[in-house]
Image (cartoon, rainbow, N blue to C red; front, side, top):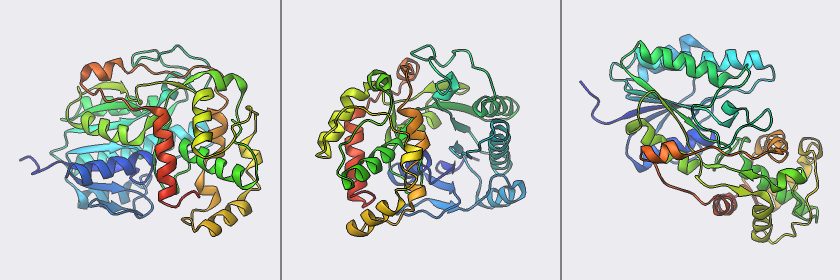
Length: 351
């Protein structure tokens, strides 16, 4: 007997990916949604949130047995660890516990959607063949995407459900307390520069400033996730970005103008080092402008910014496969950054 309406389990429900998937499925499409997150939601939603440690197999089993059955799983949970081998082990265990227990609670389970990224193609290692295609060869492991995808593919083959892999890149959207968000890195960096009376210099390399880059709007990814859950071909991977590319040299000047700042010339700045002592400045900014009380260490991932702004190679994923399969929306990435900055302001996250 099928469920009266889709019931999605979203793992990582308050991250920049999961939060937007939850909102789109539950509050726009009317799905029943259960989300897993260590924190409670800070926004109005019809979704149910559970606090579950996916590394705890027994706790995961108990929670999902009570919350199920589910028709779909959208897996966006992630744990950052410095040791690559430990990162593989932890992230594979989390996926395995989540999917295994969701499956046990759900005879009606139809599909699991797994999120990866351009690191699949070696974007984190250096120049790689572009545009990257979904069937390009893998790079040298360890890389937890490979272990997760291989396990999921094998599990699906032995079960009555299937899987779809989505590969976005540099997902940008609104999520409080989730620092892995490039738009927030830029917005907070700009606010601190303005507070110090400095121009908005591009803080990366001059080479990166002129290279081609791509991003994925979290809202675009949420729409694509619904498509992947219901219309995509099972057992298939799809790159899902905004569908355009840009150069920082053009975008950065638009961001500076939008913020009424001088872009000046690029200057390589190690954000991880230079922002280490800026918490008192951020506290003053928060107090003066009545901003949401997000701790400085949770507001922006400076190391992530250092990596992105020093990619001295083009980063481009082909979106031909997903467009030909039926998901064809395109987002203007430059307009997306400006829209998100405005949204951060309206929600009182930045001044």
